[in-house]
Length: 446
Ligand SMILES: Cc1cc2nc3c(=O)[nH]c(=O)nc-3n(C[C@H](O)[C@H](O)[C@H](O)COP(=O)(O)OP(=O)(O)OC[C@H]3O[C@@H](n4cnc5c(N)ncnc54)[C@H](O)[C@@H]3O)c2cc1C
Image 1 (cartoon, helix red, strand yellow):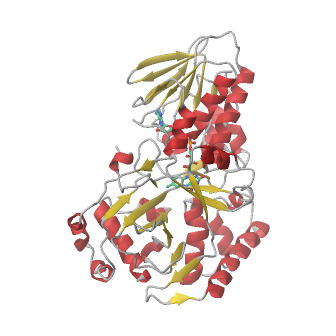
Image 2 (cartoon, rainbow, N blue to C red; image 1 turned 180 degrees about the vertical axis):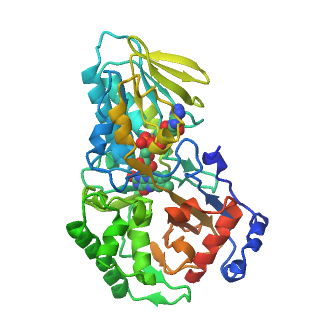
């Protein structure tokens, strides 16, 4: 099972022995120090995530969000990050989606039913749905397949301090409810300054900031032009081809860091419309430190929970719902399903869509697909990289690890390198080999 437990910590030099199999790349990578700790994520292989966050497929319509989340048979509703129309793929989008589903279900069901509302998933959407339903006077029961809370919010403490394997940034602080929620838990928030960036070539030479900024502007104008001239719902790739977006190494780097890593998928799998409707991230972004697991614990406080309890069948009964799990069958008045899109589509959370009369919700849900964003987090005995929050690496093989963030504290040098889309899905299954690939990319920083 590819949960947090799967993300092995490679604590010794010996753990990287497998890297020597990588055709000459290791020799190159040897120039930089060897990490003394590493975490490699596998969201794509995680059976309870099947990727990082959802995107709208080419050919889909923006209204899919609304269609998927209509209450069916007065007792079934979907929620989760995918379905927030304002900020999909984010923590605050997931929170909002859960709350909205709770409000709509409350309006649809009868209050005289004393049975609990069953909530599938103890991520942010499930927890916020449960808290809201409780506020509205309902009994609730939350079940999750994992042995921990939080879903795609996952804090690891194996490197000696809290490190986020899933969500780590609050995107758009202005008016964002997460800012206060996180502050109340004593979790720090460090503003991200996207201008504090150095971009390097494999030769280790630095590209001038004005050239980098021009490449970023060129990409945003190309996307805008593609949206203005393209047909509805075409892929971003088709749109960029239409406006002849260049394929230089720097143009590819801009595309990877601004789009692929951000939306967790390749232009060919992204809907051109996707970029029209995103929330304007006002107020800048902050990175949280100190463990989002504390926020999750707060959101879960007082809720009846069953962990290590995958739902294996969700079906209607004459007057309610039934959820079969390996811990037994639970009966409820209604159900909120927050399993990720990738899990729903792969049958990991089987729902009797016809029984609930939820065929249109099923069809709307199929208009999304799961993106993938993976992280490699590395600690070193000594810092060897330039003093910048963000580092860009142009021309890395398969565009992997084109973006790196400095997570160092005064006593612990640490980097996180990102890769997304097909490059993330095709990472080697061996963590040692993945670390070697990251080392190869990072050698440009020496
Ligand atoms: C690598 C990565 C980086 C990210 N970075 C950011 C970021 O910086 N900022 C940001 O805002 N967002 C970020 N996100 C997205 C954010 O984490 C998600 O949008 C949000 O946490 C999703 O919450 P959710 O409740 O919709 O889904 P989840 O958190 O996935 O919760 C769904 C739950 O359902 C459970 N489940 C699945 N199947 C079953 C079943 N059959 N039975 C019972 N339970 C089941 C799962 O175990 C899971 O706990 C990132 C995500 C990833 C993976």
